[in-house]
Image (cartoon, rainbow, N blue to C red; front, side, top):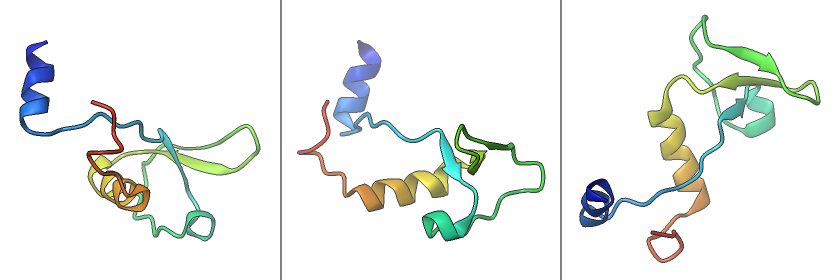
Length: 75
């Protein structure tokens, strides 16, 4: 309850982000600078994906491309 009030005071909103990202830049138009030890795997369709290792850059791009506004997001 207290945490929710703090987030509301600072106008923070909860969003759902993807856990895995496509590894190949040809598939998602994002250049990846993955470290050599990043967790890379294949999804159920055999597409190469990687586990997010740096959320800052990815989250910024995700939010920018989704055009989130405070009117759209649930509180």
